[in-house]
Length: 294
View: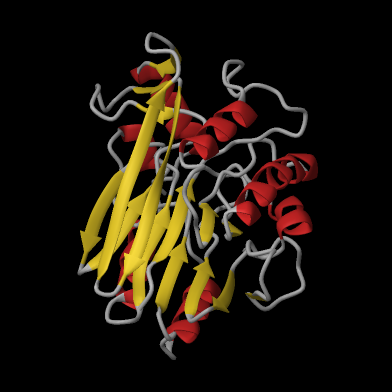
């Protein structure tokens, strides 16, 4: 079986007007640097696993597609996008369809533009399934029953070479209190893993945490990409939240019987913190955007 090479990016946070993220980060420049970092390589797939946009505008999706598509095509790859908590379903679907705009995707059934953005494709024996863990108006993640059933049905018949699942909120715990409050619903995470256990799913690709994490759950590898826009500080006070000015991604190679993940992180300004939230600010964010305890 020939290897399947994926450039895994996440959390690009583009704005329609090109504004700087947190008033600091030039997101287009960060993406340009991330792509240049691995520009000498060929890929089969470029994945942007959610928070593609910061403001959910149609123009933000057009801007990122205009930047990534020609780069990917020059390296033999197609591009896959997933919804994140900052994305807008209607605008996302207007520009990026079901997340796999360069392939004959089969979307989650339905006609409502605000339904979850989920799709499945098969290319050269590889199957790619995109799920939508976003909850409109919230920062945490869920997977509705219809998506879980969509995934089950898609996996009933194995693909010739295997399946890659892309979902923004990882089915693994976070490093900080804030990100844990904005994590995937625990029951949904467990059910996702249970659905893919024993199937041809080779790897789950996620984002959201802005730092590289690799975890195996019941033999299923989950790879979380570092953020393109900034890199979370993983080992500070977990009650606080901070990020450095840098970019990152991962090169994922799926081969016969093995999955290899090589993450990369580059700091742009060593002394620059993009943001730092103390425990009181984190508590306020959790109250406003986190999951209700009711």
